[in-house]
Length: 322
Image 1: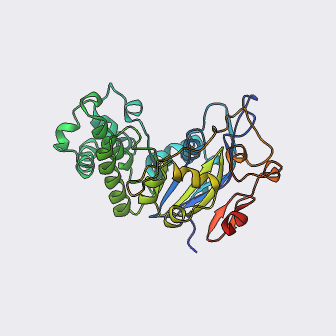
Image 2: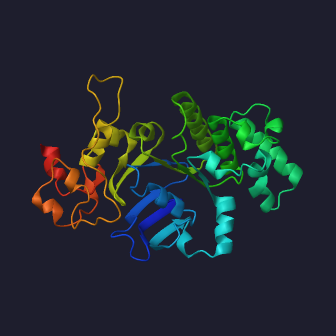
Image 3: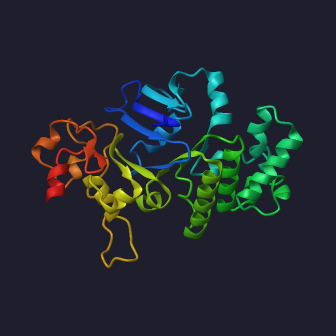
């Protein structure tokens, strides 16, 4: 079996100083192969973005990480600052969910798209030419003129395309997409997703796609990991997860998704997500789970192979039989 492009093993991220009762990310293991699109889904606060940012060495201030996070065998958590800068410029790029908060409003678009290339030694004229090609590839008309414009002159959808172009400028092997369509309308969202999937396939990149939208993840990802309270609770193929969800939390997320082909109104997962101040001894989802039993509160379930999926639930076999 070919080694994964990205391999995360038992990643745990804790806030130092005693401000949290449990880790932000708690024993997460996942992998992404070259050319594969992998989804990471869950409610806000589940630890998705922290997991994603850890792959760039961008941990929250005051956070400590343990475990292993390897890109082609090199552990990102032990890299020197110099090697991390090289990693961010050449190997791994990230698309953030809010381009207006991520692109300097005082600099021209051309400066943003070419910055990484120029830092890597590419001549200015060559960097500009490549930037024009990148903007054209993401659907921006008159790319030469666009390079001279400022961020406030673009709509949200167009600025997200600029963000994608900037992320692809270094020809990364791994693309991290942190809810890149959250603030966009449905039509623009579809256009951005189409661009992402096309360019990912053309460049044979691995992609870790972070979202709270299971249906969106199922449409573009090969495999999906479902995250709750800092832990992976289910992992399987997109087709399998959407057709045969095994964890009660996954079932709840799907039930909360509106569908045109159903007469039933969507309903959310009952209760509320855990805060960092809460650290239950057993399953973190037990207080919100309709299938919970007393033993669910006694120990944390371990993710294991069940009927073609990996599930962290003590009662999953019983629920399948029912």
